[in-house]
Amino acid sequence: MEVSELKEYKVWDAPTRIFHWINFLSVISLIFVALLMMYKSELGISGTEAKVALKELHVTIGYIFVLNLVWRIIWGFIGSKYARWSNIFPGRGFAKETHNYVSSITNGDPQQYLGHNPLGRLAISAIVLLLIIISATGLIRAGTDIYYPPFGSFVQEYIAEPGVNADSIIPYDSTGTNQSKVSKLKELKSPFGKIHKYSAFTLMFIIVIHIFFVVLTEIREGGGLITAMFTGIKILRKKPADLD
Image (cartoon, rainbow, N blue to C red; front, side):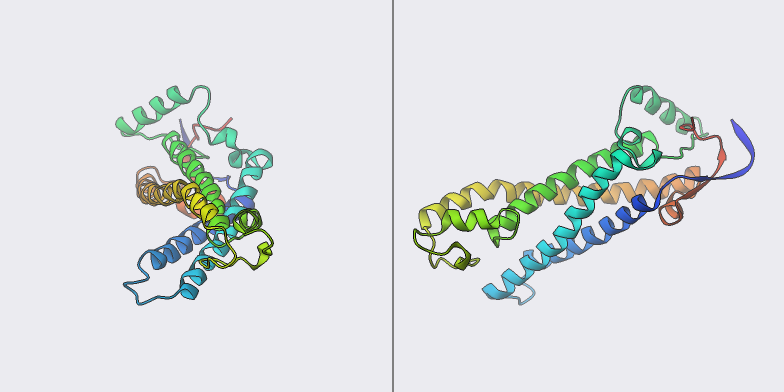
């Protein structure tokens, strides 16, 4: 159904837009610092202090990333209509909705959506799942690598020798530690590190694909999808497929 003129719709509320850009900046920053850590030898960065400093920087940015995600998860239950998970995660009738959307593209007359289109909802669902996995594994590695909250103090107490003040245990220093427990800790944290690493690689891949299809959708369907993440407003010519 066509409407006679372009029409503005308020879609993304301020908290959703703020989350999006904080998340974008924190992910880019985390990737940059992670690359520094991975290639520190090639970049001439050496020594335990530099290694710990990079990890501390990565973890500090990670806290911003995690707190921002926690807020977004909460907002997904109490926020405005198109910020809610019920309008993002696939639910009842999603298969039919996706079929109709793909058919509209095939027929050269793509449907327009106020919220995410069905394919976009799949992408966002995958991204949110990866963000949660990266957050959880990152917090575990923060506690086991450099003894940062929320798990760091428990790790220090676990590996400290009897009679040693747990707070005196410092990263990458065996002084005052029980080496048997340190070895067990390494075995425990290794899988979390791998999950964290490969989840981040997967996230980077999906982000690139997501950006590509956002641009493609903007060209193909219009509606100001990109500018809406700044203004919160979409401008559509057709009646939105998800307008109640």
